[in-house]
Picture (cartoon, rainbow, N blue to C red):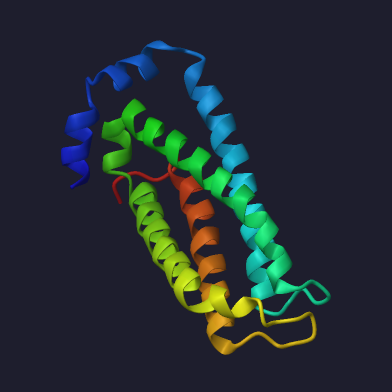
Amino acid sequence: MWSSLANFADGSPVNLWIQDTYWLWPVMEITHFLGLSLLFGGLLVVDLRMAGHIKGVTPSSTYKLLPLVLVGFTLNLITGVLFFFGDPARYSINIGFQLKMVLITIAGLNALFYHWRVSPSIVTWDETNEPPKLAKFVAYVSLTCWFGVLLSGRLIPYVGTG
């Protein structure tokens, strides 16, 4: 699958644009980092509260961070696709990149599960209630996946094909 995507991206107009524009890669790196800060920073607060570690904050008030999380994810999605298009041969065979994609997929499925099963009940929680076990589980899966995404993303320059 990755090799097919790499073949599609290699030599495409986007690929040539990224390779020919010397300042673009650093701008994408900065934007990716800012997106990651918004994404991971917001989710850290939401997930830690959902797991019951941040007392004194109503779980529903953490909803105010979700737009920032979505902005961060969108920035990372756009720059991530551009990174792949910019150097498809490198990313398509990279173990760190492949692990990152698996973890993002699991995190996305976990977010859907959160939206369908946990989110509707959050409005009934207050600062003093202990979160349900299901909410804790979803929070810990999210934290584990996104921490793994962060680590595997940082490993991309240092690991190869395994």
